[in-house]
Image 1: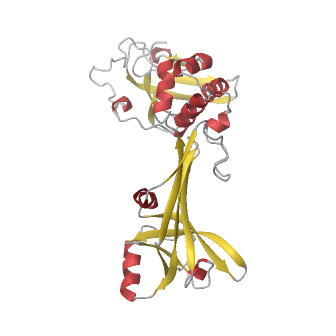
Image 2: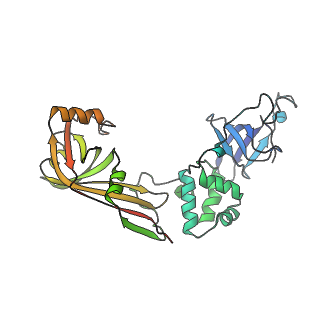
Image 3: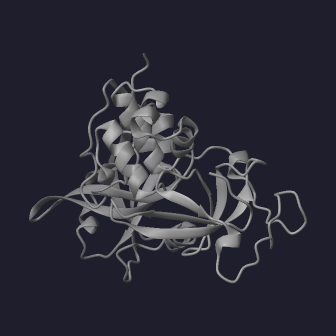
Length: 305
């Protein structure tokens, strides 16, 4: 496959039911016009680096109706050529599809080269998918899923609306306790956590938007809400993170007495420092503070081997 600036890359795979997608080739990586190409997609206007698969073909500029055969054919360094910042010059930031592929590949003990051979893709393209945010075609995903013994839905993160942690466990997991400093780093400055309280109807656990202020957890609520039952009691507060793509994560538990913050200056300070409004909406002017008297945490990650 060879192309010039201004040619059109067309991807269509009738055998898999995938829709047709096309875009203008706005950047070449090789002087001889071989892949990969920088393509500006007609449906989104975005420019991405594309390694064409077997479901792709180039529609040359001179083949389009009404276009002169020799018009607008320029090399990447000639005047008028479109200049696109190369994503290959940026620090790698894998997307979730790539991370899931790496996880499945390592789970099965496959090398990148063996996986590429099984899927019928070029090893450099597989490396790009694993190391960069990418949007491979459906046909490519089908072949990769078959090579890895998984499904397209799993590679795409299917089931994101289901409770986290339903994926497969690591082959060699390592469970370890987090230090106090690591726990505080996980808590960060704000986010969404869960507070466990005792109510007249029994124990309850509810999510709240929280802030870390000095040595306490603070959250907003209403006087008649379930979280408000925390006031005047010792409560537990938990925050966690599950990385579905890598089958790992962490959790941090805070235990301490809760009190209502009533001092006007303290309330004003909390309101001024709040990073977000409560996701539940409405007027939530009651601040509750949980003093950190006990802090613990655990993490699950791949074991050092």
